[in-house]
Length: 126
Image (tube, rainbow, N blue to C red):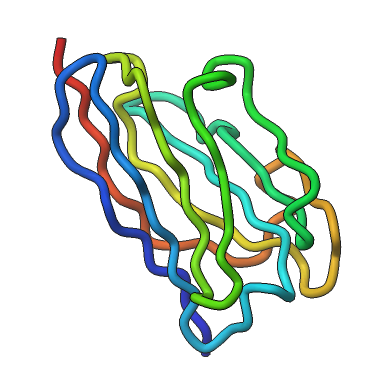
């Protein structure tokens, strides 16, 4: 059974940067559009970023636009979320997700994604 494995979370000061990685194990990343979501304590899971299978289309939530960049390296079977200018309100557990196999575009709705990682904690101190 394939897995998505996130890494790269941690504690950072406001204004700092982190890069999250999502490694696909037992799956071929190029078969899937990918998304990043986040969930803060007491809040619902929310969309952060999406990248199509080809990488040509990238979408971002308004709250992260201009600060976060989603990318993929199919040769390494890994997707990334580069997070710059971090704010305390970015504190959350971050999850990567893969859409239905061979669907080019999935978008920002969580229930459109078939596979989820276990999450990685990002904490931004003020």
